[in-house]
Amino acid sequence: MSTDPTAAVGAGQARSLAGPLVSRTVAVDPDSLPADLLDLLPADGGLTWLRRGDGLVAWGEVLRVETTGSERFAEADRAWQQLTAHAVVRDEVRQPGTGPVAFGSFAFSAGSPAGGSLVVPRTVVGRRAGTAWMTVLDVGAVTGSPTVPTPTDPAASPGHVELTDGALDAAGWQQAVARAIGEIRAGRLDKVVLARDVVARTGAPLDPRWVLHRLSAGYPSCWTFAVGGLLGATPELLLRSEKGLVTSRVLAGTIRRTGDDDADLARAAILAHSSKDLEEHEYAVDSLSRTLGPFCSSTNVPETPFVLHLPNVLHLATDVTGVLSTGGGSGHASGHPSSLSIAAALHPTAAVAGTPTDQACRLIEEIEGMDRGRYAGPVGWMGADGDGEWGIALRSAELDPVDPHRLRLFAGCGVVAASDPAAELAESEAKLEPMRHALGDD
Image (tube, rainbow, N blue to C red; front, side, top):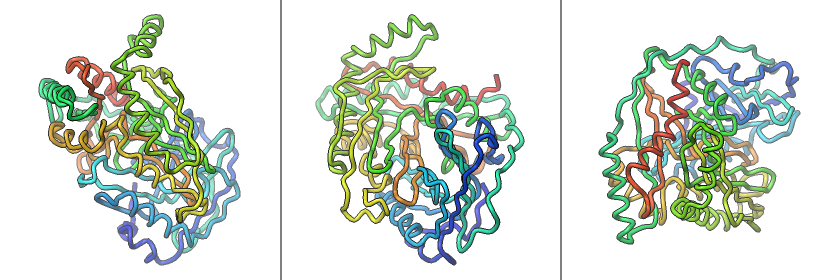
C-alpha cells in the first residue's frame, strides 16, 4: 500500500488536514465485478474484509491515524468522529459499508508497541446481497468519477515455505500450559488463553493476495481480513453493529476434525457434551454478555451453544444479540455507541484472554514469552455513523514490515483446570492449519 508521508496523523490531528474528508459512492453493476473481489487488489494486498464473497476491498491511503496505549481505541474513535463530523458525503447507495469507511486493527495488549491504526483508503469496492458499489475518498475534493477497476495480475506463489519455532518451542510451550493449569487448580483464576507463534520464511517475496485468495476459498464462512500488516480468516465476530442492533459470536471449546464425515459427526457430539469445553465456553459467554449489557436496552443469550463446523476444527459457538441503547453522547450520527467503542469494551474477551480477565492477562505476560502484537486484537471496519464489523484477529499472520520473506503465524488455546498440555499443543497445531495451507503452493 502506498502511503503519502503527510497522511499519517496522530489522533489529535484529525482536524488539521488541508480540507474536509470527501467521499463519493456510486452504484456498480454487480456483473461488472469479478466473482472474487480479491482480484481487484494491487500486488501489496490493500485492505480486505470479506465473507462468502461479500464485503469490502480497498486500496490507496488518504490518511492513517496511529494510536498507542490503553487509550488506543478511544483516541482512534475520537479522530474518526472528527474526520466524519465535517465530511462531505455523496452516497447514492446507502448501505452498510458505503460512504466514508475506515479499516482498523489494534494490538492485543495496551503495552504493545504495535498500538493501533485506522486507515482511510482512497478506493473501496463493496458488495452485499446482490448490491455492489464503489467509493472514492480524498481530502478537500474528489477528482474524477468513480470507474470500475479491472482485475490485477494474479498473485504469485511464495514458493517453498520453511516453518521454525517462534518464542517457545513445543516443549517450552507445553511447560507454559502446565504452569497455567497449576495456577488454575490453585484457585488463582478460572481460565487463561495461551498463544504461540511460528515463524514462516518464504522462498519468494510474499504476495499477500496469494494468502488471502486461499483463505477466502478454503474458509468461506470466516471473515477474511487484511489490515495493518495483519492478515487472516477469523471465525470469531467480536461484534457487528447495524442500525441499532448488535451481534457478537463467541467461540470457545475446540476439537480437531479428522476428515471423515461420520467420525466428525461423532466428534461434534463429544464436543457438545464435553464438560471441559462447555466450562470454557460458559466463561466466555458470561464475560461477553456482562460487558455488552450496559450498551443495550435488551439482549438475547442462547442457553446452549451450537457446534460450528470449519474445515480444520469444530468449535462450540454462541451468537449473542442486543438492541443498542440510544443517547449517551456517542458523537456519531446514529446516536448509538460506536462499534469501535463497544469493541474496546469487549476486548479482551474471555475467549482470547481468560477469566478473570485481569489475572489472565497478567499470567499471559508472565509465561507466554512473546508480544502478541495485533494478534487476537480487534480488526475490521466502521462507517461514518459508527456502525461496522469487528472481528478478533485469529487464524492470522503478521507480515514483517522489513523482510517480505518473513511472517509470524499465531494460534491460541483456552486452558482450564481439566486441560492437558499435549492436547492443547495438538489443538494449537490444528488452529495453525489455515495459515499453513494458505502459504502452500498445492
